Image 1 (spheres, rainbow, N blue to C red):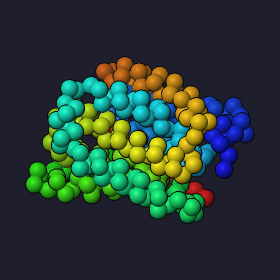
Image 2: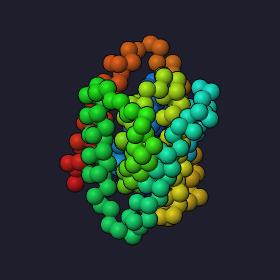
Image 3: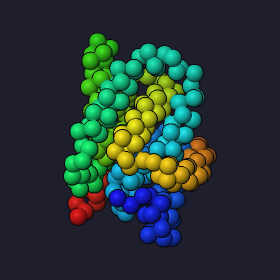
Image 4: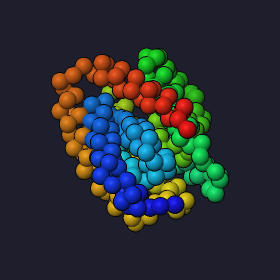
Length: 254
């Protein structure tokens, strides 16, 4: 497999512009609504490269922006105590499925990514208000985490079903944003370990990912500025419609 830097060279200016635009748009979305960077960036990049390559590019931008998100809120220890079964499930699911997939044919990964994006868009557009009773969280958390990790290992997207689950826990707005940052950070670390184990993330890929951090941060700062100037519900609807259309394209392509 060519390295990402080889892919940059082969793709030329067009690919570099695609990477910069993808992370800038993804950062913009995350700045406005607090999530969406991996979903948007991997979805857009997968039009031109395999999901594992897109996931390798994602690692450093995702880690930095999620730690940034995680650091705000002051409820870190409380959320760690409450969510550790979910976080453990994410790590186990990501690494377990990654080991199972090692050496197997993954040409279907783009279609799986498309299906995951469409499901995510459908859940987001439905406006459904779910609730998870406290009594079931002890066993539901690990199941949701392992499922999220498995999907992340296959597609690079780690929002389903973790985000709907977190939204159903009754957290306040600030706690929810910090909880998503915590879950996304755990997912990014586990995904990085999976990619390193599979030989898809090395020194050259890390440098390529570091370069992608700049447009991601620029987009995130622009999104935070835009957050106070646009209707958040309208922006979310447009986001989910776009994610659904991109998922349909990836599902039907090839």
